[in-house]
Image (cartoon, rainbow, N blue to C red; front, top):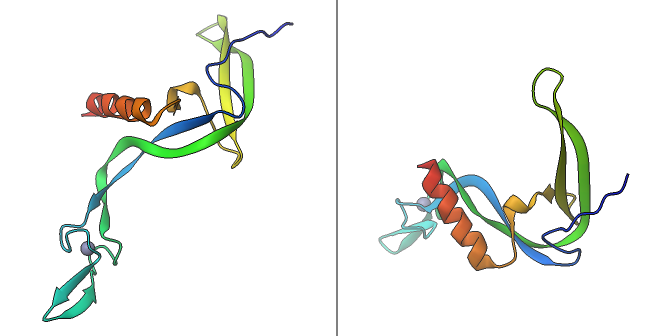
Length: 126
Ligand SMILES: [Zn+2]
């Protein structure tokens, strides 16, 4: 068979990766400082363990990373659509040096586009 496909991104291209993860919000107890000062003494905040941030309850899409594509994989497979019906499908996955891979739904050429998409997706969730 012949596989001939135009990919959205190139090997060696730097892209912005978005991921769904729990939101991190500034700790309300210490105003995100990680410590509280009482009578001139500094105490580590025991609510956020000195990190100044707390994990929110919600999972939201957020900009996770900026990385360089090191490999592109094309998967051709038959998707069973019920009974004896199979549909040929093609999926392109972009791989990175840390062995993670993503489809182009999660990758963006600029930070601005990645953030815009996160905002759109987070609106749909609410
Ligand atoms: Zn705190």
